[in-house]
Image (cartoon, rainbow, N blue to C red; front, side):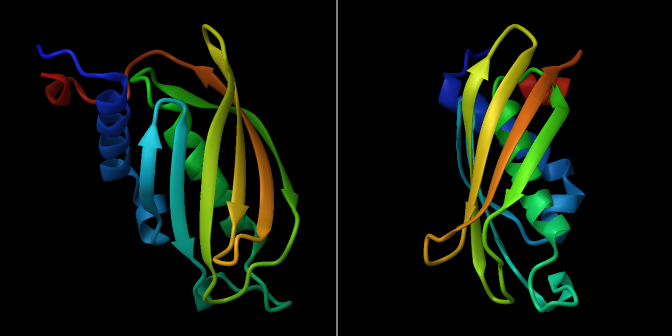
Length: 148
C-alpha cells in the first residue's frame, strides 16, 4: 500500500465522501479545495431555495456550512460526525448569489474538534458564521477498496 501525503489523503477522503453525498450534490455544491482540517465549498442560490421574504432559506445556508464542516473534519480518514453546532445569520443571501463556505479547523484532539465556517457571497460579504463541534466515531472515511 502506498503512503499518501496529508494533502493527498485529504483529497482522497473528500472525493470518496462527495461521491456518496447526494444531499450536497443535489444542491449543486462544488468542492473548490480541501486540505488537512480545511475545506472550501461553493453553492449558487436558485429559486427553489427562496423563502417567503425573498431571501435564501436559512436551512440551505445551514446545509452549505454543515457540508463544508463535514469535509474539513473528515480529511484525516477517520470517520467524524457533528456533535453540535451554532449558526449566526449575518446578512441575507439572494437568488443568484454564489456562496462560498470556508471551513477551518480551530482545535483537534484525540476524538473531538472545533471548526469555524464562514459563508460569503460573490462580493465577499459575510452571510453566515457557523461553529461546528466534531466527534470521531469508529471507521474510516474511504472504503477499504479505495485504500489499496
